[in-house]
Length: 136
Image 1 (tube, one colour):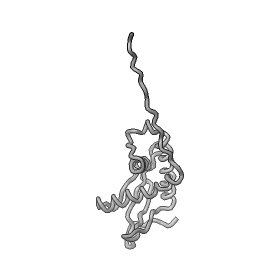
Image 2 (cartoon, rainbow, N blue to C red):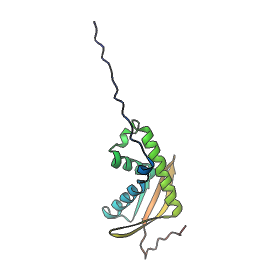
Image 3 (cartoon, helix red, strand yellow):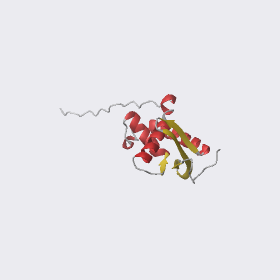
């Protein structure tokens, strides 16, 4: 008799990206912008929709970008929503919010778009800022 090794695959259920979960993508973007300005001291930063997706999924479910194939549908749905959020801010021309430390305002411009990956530039705007954007 020969023994056969039976290969079993564990079936991993993908987390579901519900509308209420996807609605928190802008919060992830705000955190990325705050981190870039406060920790790194930058006045402008480039962020791509795919990097925002990776950051969001990692913070929400602790799933690394290297696991993209395993969680294909999750990454696809969050990438799609990240692009929608980016398009919204691009049309507005600015991102702004109030928090405990005051009002934060960033001008938004399109840096590039490569195969659906939208890359936006965010520039800190102050009341005396020379770099201005029109109100759209």
